[in-house]
Length: 315
Image (cartoon, rainbow, N blue to C red):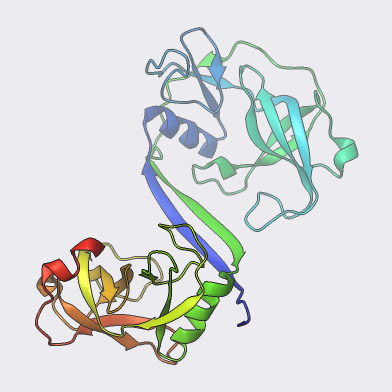
């Protein structure tokens, strides 16, 4: 039985979104050390504000300014901060109802330890030294003395110079991936410039990459079958947006490729041919990466196109 592989894996997607008038005013306000909420149809002040009433679904736009002080409604201690969290020393996650708000804002509290945190304690905003129009303009909350401020927030027009109109929300997941027995064997075969799948003992179909079980019959697979190296383009798309950290010029073609002998098409990039000449049925072969750890791309073999009936079940 081959050794099972394991490796760190990062999935990252920087999501860019535009802001409506309410969210724009809220984030621009943070840049100017002003906290805005929005009043709903029943008079509740929501902080952070939203564009639509969560009860009636009516559009909201009645902005008000709340205080930078508030009360902790609940909390949880974080003894080991992770990468990109607001503080690099132990802190408390807190829900804070700012004075004048009807809902609580999630952020962090800078405190010396869990014994210094309690529900009902008074806190205030510590503003970041450099502010750009993001929730991180609130560096954290810190304990403070004093009674709650005015409960009636002041109206605010929501107008600022150079308003923030869009944000980038970085989504990232770091984890250790263990591919398992079947995929470990598949990856090891790639180092030898071979592509292997596994055959289902019930339906006899060969699946590449193997999963260790037949997705149709649900039974375990163990019989290894070498497929390819050539295959047929079953369908494809033209990519026109350049991906971050990917050194491939656009446009390029990404395709489903049914390797000879396989009953499942896998993904692969097509090169060595103008993007507008790629077509269904095109016969292709692999071009291996330096070191032969994986297929870099597929290129045309020069053979006649495959007949549609030979791959129609794999489209």
